[in-house]
Amino acid sequence: RFNIRLPDGARAAFFLGDGAGVGKGRQIAALIKEFWSQGGRRVLWMSTSNDLRFDARRDLEDLEAGDMIPVLPPKKDSVPKGDLSKHYSEGVLFITYSLLVS
View 1 (cartoon, rainbow, N blue to C red):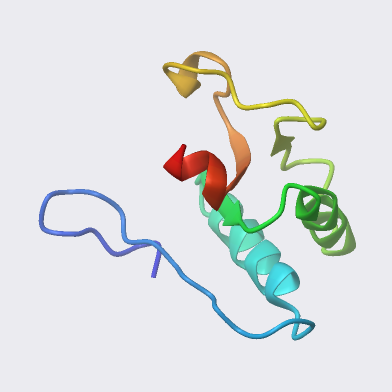
View 2 (view 1 turned 45 degrees about the vertical axis):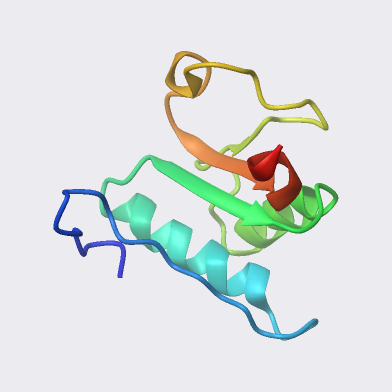
C-alpha cells in the first residue's frame, strides 16, 4: 500500500485497527522494515499511548531492524515544534493521537 500515490501526489497510508494483543505492533514493524529495505526513510507511527514507543522499538529489534531504524524521539521527549525535517532526517516518528490533535 505504501507504494501507491494518491491523485495529489501524496503517499497512501496504512491503518491497522485490530483488537488488543493480536500483534499490531509486530505487523507494523514488519511493514516498516520492508519499506526501509525499499529505500523509504521516513515513517509516521501513530498510537494511543506514548508508552507503546518502547514496544515499537522492541518489535523492530525482534525483526533484527532495531539497529538500522531509529524510533524518534529517542526517549520520552516531546516532538519539537516547527519543521520536523530539521530535527529528524530519517527514522520512525512515533506520536500519539492526542499530540496530533493538540
